[in-house]
Every structure is written in C-alpha cells, then in structure tokens.
Length: 337
Image (cartoon, rainbow, N blue to C red; front, side, top):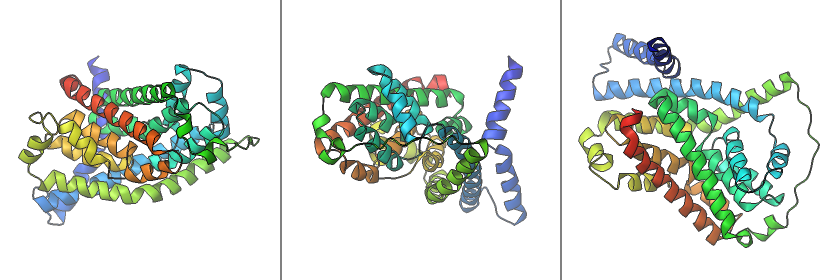
C-alpha cells in the first residue's frame, strides 16, 4: 500500500504538480541574482512557474478532451439526451457537460441549440450548469494542486448541483420563461460525418490553439493575482477574511467570484494562493465555482435567451448550491487535506 501511495505522490507532485519545474525556476532566478525569498523574487518565481505549468497541462488536457468531444457533436449529443427521461436525463446531461467547452459563455450557444431542439428545459439547464463548472480538465488540474480526494469530491459536488438544479427547474415548469424566438426555433438535423483518427487529431489540435488563445489572457491575469496574494497580502488578513474565524467566508467568496470572468484554468492559481495563505478549502472552491458558473458576461448572454424570472431562478439555484458545497467542504476539510 505504501508503494502505491509513493507512486501516486510522485505523479501528483512531480508530473501533475511539476514541483521539479518550480525548483529549476528558483535555481535559475538565483543564478541571475534574484532573491526568491523576497517578495518580488517570490512573485516572479510563482508567476513563471504557474504560467508554464498551467499552459502545459492546458495543452495536454484540451487535446485529450477535444479528441473525446469530437465523438459528441451537438446533433449526436441531442440524440443521446433525447433517449432519456426524468432525472436520468438530467444525470446524462450533466455528465455530457464534462466533455464540452471550458467556460460558461461558450456553453450558452449549445444550451440554446438544445432548447430549440425541444429537449426538456431542466435537462438543458443541467448541461448548462455542469459544462463550465465541471470538466475532465478540472479533475486533473485540481488533483495537481489539492490532491485526488478534493478533486473527486469537487467534481461530484458540481454534478450534484447540475442534476438537482436542472431537476428543480423542470419541476417549476418555467418553459414560458424562455424567449419566444428560441421556443419557436427548429434545430437543423444535419448528417454526421464519420471522422478518421487523423481528422479527430487535427480537430483536437485546432481546439488546443483556439482555446489557448482565448484562455491565455485569463491565465496570465489569474496567475498575476495569485502571485500578488501569495507574496504581498498578509496571511493574517486572508485568515481573518476567509479563514475559520469568519463563518461568512463562503458567502463572500461566492459573491466575489461573480463579477469575474474566467474558466477553471484562470481560477486555479488564485485558489492555490488563497489556500496557501490560510483560506478555508470550501471558501476557495466556492470562489472557483462562482467565477466559472455565474460570471457577469455569461449572465448577460444568457439573458438574451431566457426571461428575468428564469435567469433569477438559475442564479439563485447555483448560488445556494455553491454555498452549500462550500460549507460542506469546510466541514470535511480535515478529511481531505
């Protein structure tokens, strides 16, 4: 058992976490006369290390996930979802959301297409919640920072929010809150081409380039914020605001994440820095969920498709769900880290 534990720790720390890279960067900076124990030196090391680590992982993950995604074009996904009913359909939709685009804004066009195709509203919302909040990339990235226990519980919690949120919306019968042009829209049933392995690999690489261009600015911003938190904000301040002494830490983190716009790749370095400074685990994960699921730009886009009442219900369900998950993580933190 100890052998397997050692192997896993090596994978987590040296392959996923790339701790060796941090050491190489530190030695290189020292060789150039930069003191990495100083605030500026520590910030530079954190920034270079996290940017390289995240972009390398991002490239590998997007390629693999996009290759898988090539088997689930919108029409095929619609057909798969159409075979299921009730909560089973919500579960399938939530799981399919894990192999689709990386941010909330890119999920909304698919949500509109599925709704226009006549899929149940609750099912499409399960997909919409799951797609930005939980994906295969988040599982691997979270493992690289927080370990496999946190990663698995985070993904399961996200799926629970997606399934329960979609099911609740279905029970409320809010179909009349979808804009008329979408309810009257008709999906075009196009024949699906059978792609070769070469075609799928080309598609995956194109997705790597396209997504990396879109994500890179947010990664740089996120790492910059993380470096600032890690080296410039006093630990006492973070603990006071987001530590165990503040029962409202989860609420603050969830609300603070809403105005931001990023995906899982942009929030990881901020979360890493906050946790290192003493923030509670549930607070950190609530912040990540809030950013990826409830960003203002995505809400503006979603408002074009649904009416204010349904938008309010969606935001309320996600917010309450995220806060419940945050407090749950705080309660079991000692078991996970």
